[in-house]
Image (cartoon, rainbow over all chains, first blue to last red; front, side, top):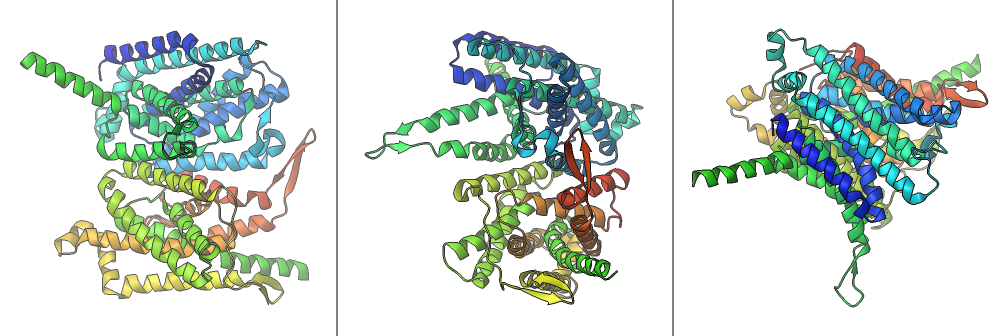
Length: 336
Length: 303
């Protein structure tokens, strides 16, 4: 999993499959995968910071919110076009990330995670206080759309492929970064920060850089999501659950390898859709059949339970696990 | 002048009352960290379990509040033990995994409650209804009971730790768990005991928190934030620091409730600067500021 070629080929295969399958998807699944792509961007953004340097952030939804509210509100009130507000939103997220990195350099391990948990909670309260502008918990509608087509189908395709473009660009950049010299240093910081410092490398500089990149990527996802939704949704921009789901995605796929977070992102969002579809079914048990509609409400629960099971039994994640199996099988063939 | 005095008196009384509850909320959290170096992000969820248990027993089993209260405390004690034996014990070595696992558990509990009891806000009937007058301030009787019970629990806890044999064992383990193991203390049993006590304290705090504020599936967040704020201000693992910090945070929150709000408007859109809508925010902002400026807490970190 460590080689650049392996990661790039996994990324390449995934994005090509995503591009090719789109026209064959039912409408419901296309919408799901559109948002899964944004979520994969969040998860990869989380991974470049937390997965690689080992500083676990619970509050990456904060950057989503900063970028999302900035672009959405500027677009609504100042009427700037989205090609101007999205970069501004991302810039604000980067700024927030740089600010965020100040305590990160002072706090280690759990203390850092604590403050990251508090930031989005404080942000949510401020959004409610400023409800006259932000719409509070109800959100705001009427934000400019990402795709201006009048036709629903065309819009759906346009949304899907724009976000596919964002995901692909982010994926290529992050995989390249994670396997570059910078990525190796970030990994080394995770394993032993003192040793890296002893080697004469300024770890603070690299951590700040990782923060900025991470905030930028997650912010990009957040800004695009607002325009894809054509609305500012408080519940999606401020969701602590989504924040935790980024960790779930990364842990499922495998932390610190970017493509793991990408896969994990699709598994989480795709899995949720599968559960929703299952919830429509009825099992042929009893005279009236057993409705599975209760499953829908259990989706989040199932994923968090899965997370805990994974933390117990497969902490390295799915992709490295598969890679390990594959390698072992090949080794056996050669040996036999 | 008289009016100013009345307001000052009210602020003092209210903050003294609420701070005792806050200290109780943070107590279990602090102890788990002090003894086992574990940050239990499910602490707020423990409180919520206590609150819902008491509410359920009262509402559906038609128990009186005293037996409902006892059931809540018992269940939370059990939950603490199960939580430690089933989960935390296995992941304790990695603080990060512990944080993720405990936070995931908090969200699992939230989801379970949403599924079984919906997201509706519930009310817990008070121990004693009505209110009494202290000088010129009206105080809800139940809050005075919460205050008394909180202090009683804190004092009993303090006596237990400093006087009882098992309390001293806990203290010894907190100071040096390897040393404790060397002199023949079963460290794992000590940890189990601390989780049981922490669960019980959370159960007590949960019932009072519920009758003071409200019950809903998101109620675990506020106690968790309060616990953080208190232990960060007071220094993680320090009992005295926690109580002082609880009083500071309580005072700050009550002051926010009574501070005059400044209405700031731009082009017909307004918001309130300070005032009651800032109650939750102020402690968060103080917490962030302290973490930025003095990460070891105002009173240092008592080991």
